[in-house]
Length: 391
Figure 1 (cartoon, helix red, strand yellow):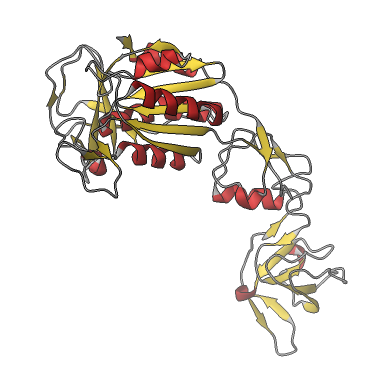
Figure 2: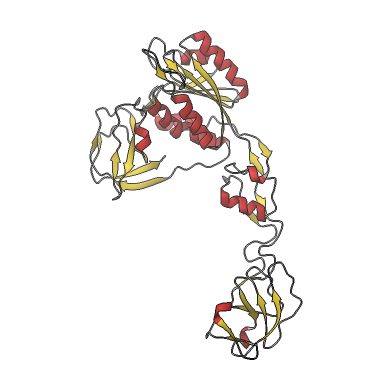
């Protein structure tokens, strides 16, 4: 068995970087920026009123003010503010020349002769100054950023309507096993529905990568070989599930070698997920994941996801939260690193999810995260601080 840390390093050192493409900024959500985004304007582009009120001079606040102009947003002021003058102004409008503050409308009253009087003792300036947020030429988004809704607003304000983003990796997904039927079929005796493929498709989509599903390959060398050869040209990474353990029909590793993949490891000291295979062929990569859904899910999260993000030039760092165990967890064997699904209780403790084995497909539905137990460590004691990896 290859230690998990060694296997992870092998995977992460085997990547090649994907190319770039331009997309419309409205279609860029969850894509990874391939280049820095530079602003072509200043923000704000002018001294801007932060609220509805009156633009005037601080030195005149104790005096009655004569209103000389009304300035809505989008209007260019025509008047300069002189001594004891003001302009009624709306939020977002240009502050007129020589005005150095905006007083809130609710902090004023209109006198009998229709002048404006400030009713407070002091005021904030209430002006957003030109270029105080962004200067022309400033980098507003750095390459490697995963574009979120708030970044769309920044792209808009910077005039970057066709950002360069990293191409999406294409993932070929194949399930092996003559016992499998598709979800729309009712399983016969000795059959089960294929859940792995659709779980993997969803995991790929959640990363905004592109899944290509090639169906179920029965336990036949010719059939598995044919589907692998079909998937290789159109994908960056091939992910197979099943057929990689020690049974008579676990023939995927030798078929991958027949397809000219160089296998870099064939098992990993991890629980669940020991029968995990990884290989490369030129600029193509391939994973053979365990056939049980909990195992395949966890190995995808721990190895495949970081690989795909690195291919997209994103520094992926999963969120870990340090919390105390709410109970003692013991395991029978310690020859592998273990990852256990856990929930976080309302009072801030970590509790293992009830799981009946790596085929217990429902177990992960209740989990908030995963906790690791180091190789050689037998238990996690109640009250012991652990790091919960969010999923």
